[in-house]
Length: 459
Image (cartoon, rainbow, N blue to C red; front, side, top):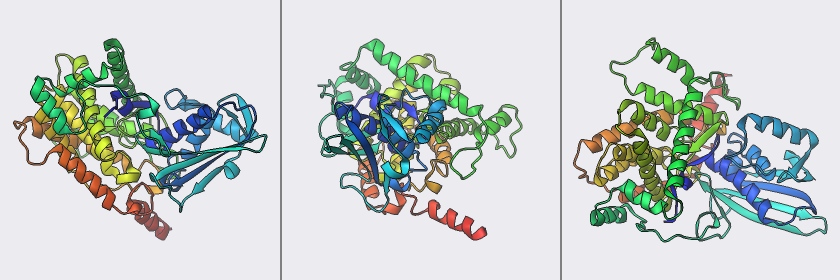
C-alpha cells in the first residue's frame, strides 16, 4: 500500500474524477511523455466503454481537450474553461501543451467507441499522434477511479513514483489494527507516521489544511449559488434556497429536531458545485465529493471540538486510510463496481474520520467504516442523461447523514462487531463483479433508462 492522503484527496474540478479529472491528466501525460512536439501534425483521442457512453454528460470531451492543451485539474480556472474551449473550437486547432498548434475538431479527432471496451478497465482511452515524417505514437490509458490513471500494462508505484518503506505498512484493516495493538498508536497517528516518510510535518499539515479549506469554500459557494445546472436536464440548484429557508426558520414541513438537515444541504451544495464543473476535492471521487466535507463541517461546527485543527487533520488522515483499503482491495470506480464504490466508500471514510476526530478507539473506527459500506452494498451507478446530477446530488446528502449515524452507532459500542471491514470490502468487490454492466456508470439501465422512457412517453 503506497498511497498517500494526497492521492485520495485531490483538488480539481467537476463533474467526475474518473471521467473528467483522470482523462485530463492522461491526455497531458501522453503529450509530456511523447517528447518534442514540434513536428506533430495531428493528434487523436479515442474513448471506450463507460468513458464513451457517459463521456458527454461527464465532460470527458472537454477534459481531454483541456489536457491536450496542457491544463491540469488542480490549476485550471473553472470560470475560464468554456471560453478556452470555444476559442479552440472556433480556430479548429489546439495548442498542444500550450505551445505547438495542430488542426483539431471534436468530430474528426475525438472518437467515442460506445460498444467497445478495452481489456483492463471499463474507463479506457487511446491517444495517438502523427509526426511530419509519417510515424505515429499511440498509448492506452485507463482512468481507474478517483482521478487515478494507469497506462496499459503499467505496474508499480502510483504516478510512477518510487515506493517508500513505511513504518506501518498495511494492505488490510486487520494489519492496521494489529499495528495499533502492538504499539498503542491510533489509526491517525500511524497514518501520520507513514505520511512523514514522504513529506515534512509542516508540509503534511499545510497540505491537509489546504484540502479542508477548499472543501469548506466549496460548501460556502454552493450554499450561496442558485440557478440551473448545465447539461440539458434543467435541474435547478436547491441547496442555496433551502439553506436560506433553514437559516430563517422558514423551512416547510421541517421535522422536529431536524439537526441533520443542514448536513445534507452541505453535501448537496458541494455536489451542485461539482455538477456545474466547479472547484471540488475528490473525496474519494467527484461523484461522492460532498459527503466528507459535509461531515467535516458538522464536526467543526456542531460537535464543539476543543482543538478543531487537530481534529480535522485526524479526520482526514483516518478517512484516507479507509479509502486506501477500499481502492486496494475493491474499487472506488463507479464504472467498475457501481455507486457502492463511490458514495458507499465516501460514507465509510466520513464515518471513520468522525469517530477518530471524536476520540474513538481503533475498533470503533473500523466499526463505523464497516457500517458505512455495509448499508450501501449493491448501490448502482445509473446517472440520468450521463450527468452527475440525478441521483448523485441527493445521494451525497443521504450518504452524509448515514455517515453520522454510523459514527454514532460505533461510538455507543465498545468496538465489538460481527462483520469486519475487510470482509465487507471483499463483499463489495464481489458484488460489483456480479453487477450487470448496464448498472455501472453506462446510463444503460436503472433510473437512466426508466426516467427517460417515462419522459418520452409523456411528451
